[in-house]
Length: 290
Length: 123
Image 1 (tube, rainbow over the protein chains, first blue to last red):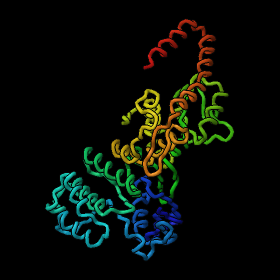
Image 2: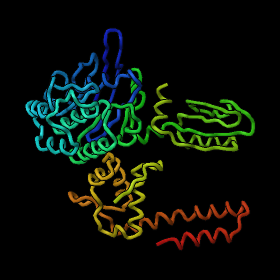
Image 3: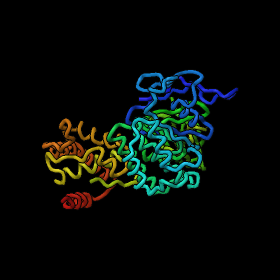
Image 4: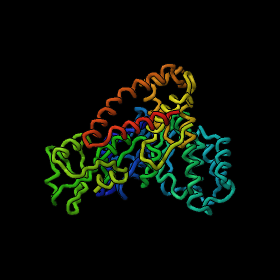
């Protein structure tokens, strides 16, 4: 289990993270989403120990990671901007991993390289963006981490490789309880892979929960009355209207309320049409981060 | 074993639960048949193992499968009976629908024919 507790990080006057609390269970595939500049990468760097927090702590299984490399020795961070030793090939990087990571598995490395048809001898700087990312992921997975922090996981990978990478990650999660935290812009990816997510917006976490709960938190209703109406017509005691768009006599309203409550209250107003619709993760994100 | 419809909007764990129920009812998964491991299913459909686990927990809590420590999940002997009992509870939905049809003026014969068609469609 990895936790960020009241983490604050500033860069001069700019507060990138403001009292961020995050709790990720072992064996979870956790999605970290947020608008551009929300602080995802900063949070990942604090959680992996690349940056030290200005306030708060990060703990792995209860132990503080600050100044304690041993505690985070089985955590690997694959950043958005990849770094490789200048002029190195995958094999050269594998040698480095072997000497710095206790669990680096040569056989697994060779097997993964083969599965992805990676050129182990080619200088990585000469590879395409997708192939570089593939190289980084192979090296990370071959190191058998307990916790994998990835920034823009599959960026540049083609559909087939993406799928295969997912299979491998999912297998590692199932087999040995690998914990994955993936920062991403792709809601589709999160939808497919994650069991829990947190949404970061301007340095704050504004949603954190398991996937089912997040999409159940908002209710979208298509509603119509015989005459033109405004927002007051669809308001009720305790209603938390996030969005109201009316086109003459039909409106789309989004509530941050319990679904049954919304259904019950709106039925009492005798609309001529009422449909409760599910929201996609993407929609939840858009409404929550406005 | 499981085939997932990625486009239909039904959550993966629910699809797995429903498919398992169907397999049990049709004898594809007979009593004491082993369930595929969470890991095998997760890898096969490239889905989050926690999602699969959620489905299995549902099946376990309803008594449709049992767990042999270290050996995985197996279909329970009473599974078919349990599913039948659960479905029987929904017979009053049929009653309610029939009342709705009647008050809308839909002919009773049409309703009975629909029941016939559904019943004979069973394998």
